[in-house]
Length: 73
Ligand SMILES: [Zn+2]
Ligand SMILES: [Zn+2]
Ligand SMILES: [Zn+2]
Image (cartoon, rainbow, N blue to C red; front, side):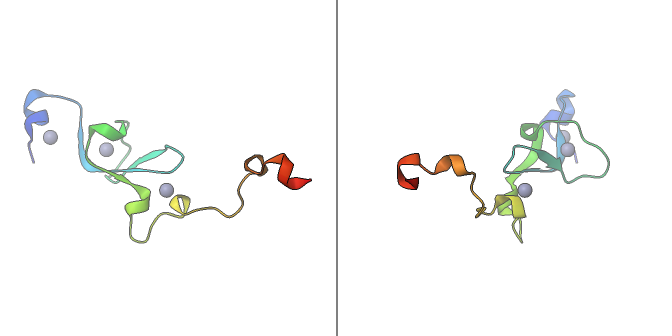
C-alpha cells in the first residue's frame, strides 16, 4: 500500500494506533513502532475497542482528593 506519505518519503505508519486513557499509545502492527499516535493512518481511543480496554472504563476507586473536605466533616 502506498499513500501520498509513502511517495513523499514522510514518516508514517499504516497500522492502527491505540491511545490509552493514560496517554500511552500502542501500534497494532508487527514489531516495534516508535512513531507517535498522529502519524498513523488509524488513530483510535482504546475506549473504541471491542471489548473496550479496561483502562477506558470509569474507575470506582477515585482518588480521595476529589472529595471536598467540608463534606467529610
Ligand atoms: Zn504510506
Ligand atoms: Zn487502554
Ligand atoms: Zn505504527
